[in-house]
Image (cartoon, rainbow, N blue to C red; front, side, top):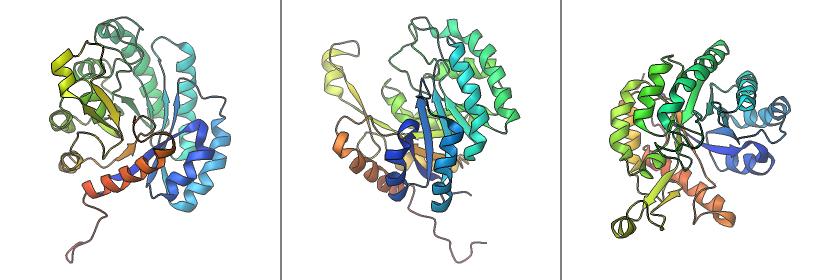
Amino acid sequence: MKQIEIGVCVPGNRTDVWLEPLVNAGYECVALNFHMSLDDVDLRKLADRVMPFLREKGVRVATIGFYCNPIESAEHRRILGEVLDAAPLFGAPMVSTFAGAYEGESVEKAVPKFGEVFRELAKHAKDNGLKLVIENCPMGGNWQRATCNIGFHPKAWEMMFHEVPDENIGLEWEPGHQSIQLIDPVAQLREWIGTGRILHMHGKDCTTDWDKVRRGGVFGAEEFAQQRTPGFGDTDWRQIFSILRAGGYESDICVEGFHDPVYRGEWEMTGLTHALRYLNWCRGGNFVAGPETV
């Protein structure tokens, strides 16, 4: 069985700053991510610049991420098509995005349009030999009033994959995005690992202040949950790795930094280095062949 690699998300517009130190820290693969815009980055020129370095280091590109609203924005759909065409230049097996939404409207209202848009995108991805994965981030929305991503809740996933049953479309699942909704991510992973829809993972966690929940509920003035870098949150990643291995998962987990309220700024690299070491420990360390290993 293939080792679950530990990768890291690198801002696509800041590869000149972050790519080399993160690769040199020991991360085994990278995700190159953009949010709502390519920030004037030419993907072909980016591939020409970063791929010689990554090949020299033996580090692959796990995914190219363009997180956008393909339901509302024709421009986002156009750019997402460009990313699907450029991903092979990086050797990436998949492209990551959001499901989109009608901003301020319910999840259900957007589902038919999701089907229309993503049936076409899934075919585009398949034609390029790619998988298309949807991150489970609420982006501050809820079931009644989504923002730019309806793909944050398991009920929505059922509706989405009913609309688009193609096998090359699935989830970029992250436990922290479930914890922040007070959903148990470990129990959810046990339920969903056998569906074949968890195709990629982000490594980000969450801490919940239950005293704030008990005192003010979830609609109060106080923020009760914070996004955390793995190793500083509530999730038992040993269980995560065990469920993934038992379920036959052979993709990777890309740590998503730049969100932790404590390990940020001058402490960002410290937090990301700790996350790599912590997740490596949780997966049992590096593979060691036994005397009877064939």
